[in-house]
Image 1 (tube, rainbow, N blue to C red):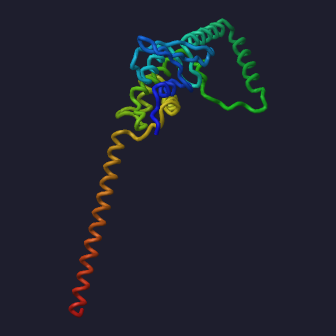
Image 2: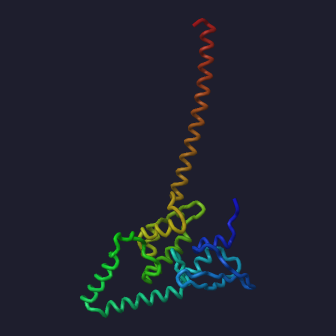
Length: 229
């Protein structure tokens, strides 16, 4: 099996097809495409950083990772638009808000068949939801064992949801999309392996017992025939 290169592993970790970078005297300059603004953002990292470190830095700096990788600048613009929409809604009368909602609903369902309901796109999430998503990604980086495809001991979707102030369902969706299955807990996996080991020992012991019993029975029958019984 061909070992994955650093560039490939980093690209996979942050959710892009291919990573473009330039080596420098003080490390590397990563050229990261913003899926929202359709432009490239340069990120300078020191030498020796692994893919997890790159992803953590980007999340800490305000990048949104998901269906569309979004840079901090575009994230701030989307947040400003959300605040503007909220201010507009607050300035309207209850009747105006009702009329606006009714028109939006009519436009949304005017097609012959309704569209399938999907998860909220990153560019439509509230700032609080985006922050929670970043925290979930960081927690998963720390507490999910990608080698064994399971959580580290004591961790699960529910605990991360409580730590990050979000729903268990959203944590599960993020984990499945970017990391892997929940997997059997480490403690349970060790117990399962112990049970399987004992089963194999029991099977081997039973086979040896059957062999010894068959040999003794054969000797008994021979002795009986020799003595005319």
